[in-house]
Amino acid sequence: EFVRAIAEEADRRGTKTKVCAGIVSFADLRLPNADAVLEGQIQAAGGRFRGIRQIAAYDPAIIGASSYVPPPGLMDDPNFRRGLKRLPAHDLTFEAWIYHPQIKTLTAVARDCPEVKIVLNHFGGPLGVGPYKREDVFPGWRADVRELARCPNVYVKLGGLAMIVNAFDFHLQPLPPSSGELATAWRPYVETCIEAFGANRCMFENN
Image (cartoon, rainbow, N blue to C red; front, side):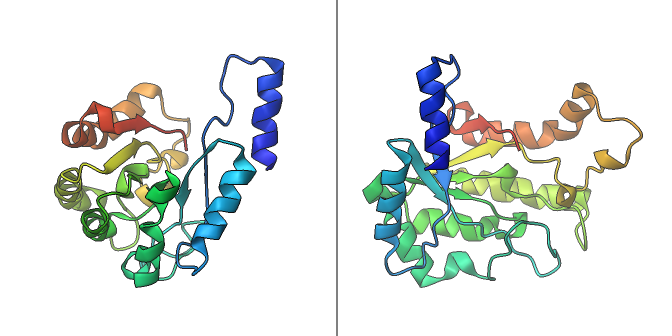
């Protein structure tokens, strides 16, 4: 309701930018009354509600890397799958924030729920901290992304690689990185996704 009020105020002021034109929120899809929760959020958003993001990013070696730490095996929970399959009835998408070891599981989810539009967040969370080394992770990440892209109901957001878990370590440099340095560092991930998904299933994100 708060975000809707901001959007409506922007509309009243006649701003050229469409502020909060689409709202993605959280709902626990495991709940037996998930439909009622979704319907309440749709009503509260006043025609702007677009989807659900229930964070699934979990790795036993990565501690405190997210504002919310989900239980292990969330995407394999039958109750979660049941709730996920209710999203198309409300014309809602599912935003998937996961770590790269979970991409195979998301691929299984996408195949089990072909009617659900899924948006892979943050390139699928390629990790580079703890036991993970970015250069070692990349080949497997690329192969898993290519397999996931074979599911026509999956889209991908290009962004979010500045998080500490991705281990590019820009925050340790004396000066912020230039746009050229960022482009060079992130190019392999961006190009992999565009080549795998096609430009029509990719979108840029600001994280």
